[in-house]
Image 1 (cartoon, helix red, strand yellow):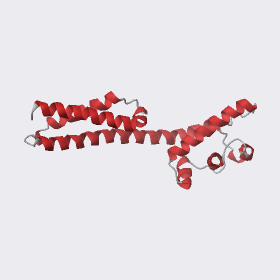
Image 2 (image 1 turned 135 degrees about the horizontal axis):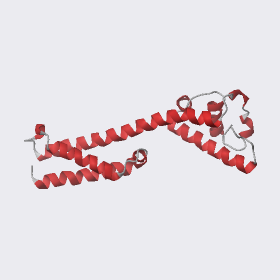
Image 3 (image 1 turned 90 degrees about the vertical axis):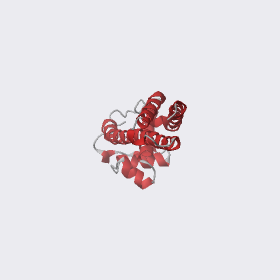
Image 4 (image 1 turned 30 degrees about the vertical axis):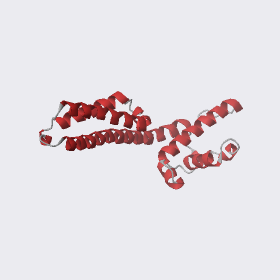
Amino acid sequence: MSQDMIDYLYKKATLVARKYYRIYKNIYLLESIDCKDLEQEASITVFEVINNKEYKGKSEEDILKITNQAIRFKLNTIRNTVQKHKEIFMENMEETITDNFFPQNKSKYDLSELKGYIDDKEYNILHKKLIEGKTYREIAKELKISFQAVAKSYNKIVKKLKKLSNRENWNIEGAI
């Protein structure tokens, strides 16, 4: 394989890594993975392919295809791992948030007073979470949205109610 081809593979690897980072930046940042990390992983993949005895004697065109597939596989694996970590984190945080912000006796809530402060969608999520005791996944399934969207909405509602409680001089310590 020519040195020009090797240089081209490394350059292409860097471009692919940058593209992946640009598209999935928010996901990678969850694990503090930056563009340089992805470029490094892509370069390592190129190195592994061009030094693999199994690929000796293959045409440059074949090596290019193999390298592209290997880089994409590697970067997708990293992205999927980060997403899986995020899901596990969100599931663990769900219980922590509920336990920390809301008392265990859910039946004593009267959420009807909040209707003037939160919209119907927010009220619905809050009611399902606090009164019905459903998980993010159960709520997501009912509303036909992702559990991440439910978690994000729920956290937004909690922040909103905290802000309102300060402004309205509500005493909601231990509740939110």
